[in-house]
Image (tube, rainbow, N blue to C red):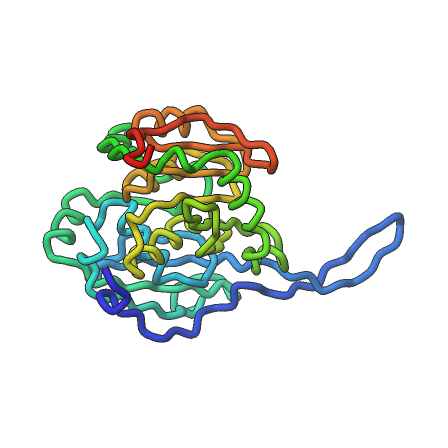
Length: 293
């Protein structure tokens, strides 16, 4: 998919950062200060005119988020199934929300076969701000079945030195987090550990969806490389990567046991506790002998 395949109109998004007056207490002294807070807004995802989910997230890069969500949730099979994305702010009053809680609505025009499939399996969902599976109605709805990732002869190049280099390079790209904190980042790194893209969101899974949407929209999804995340390695993050063919993931914090098991089942190379110069390889992933060896 090229950028023109799923056009994104110009958008004036809601502010990603907000100023708030606080009382700062220190050693018995009180001072009124202005503190920068990360915005968290409801984002309604609408497919072919039908509302599917409302997620809580940061209001920036919402078109990338919507495309990434559609891909990682299996709503569309490839970015070519998305014909257009339009996003607009929604005033709190119009959305029936309390004052000061404006939201975003993102409309996606998708292929008719994908929309028919979505209607068949549509279920009630609420934002995945915590465990990642909130709102499912049964164990069967967890969507834990998937194909194993193909083997790659370059996978072993994603070694401890490479992931530590990428993790070290992540903070300067975390522009929003530097001002407000409380914001996760998902970055894309080359096989040399160079960071090319970083997307931020208050939700770690949202940040990953934004990154995947950006890679898909610019025709780079499927290229050799790996994801770096400023979070723990939960099963949801592993599942999203595997769903779109991303073969390696490195996280700053520790993984969960289910995250490791899912990486084993999919063949994803999984690094965690990446705190340079240290890193832990939990799953080696599926690789083939290098043709250059």
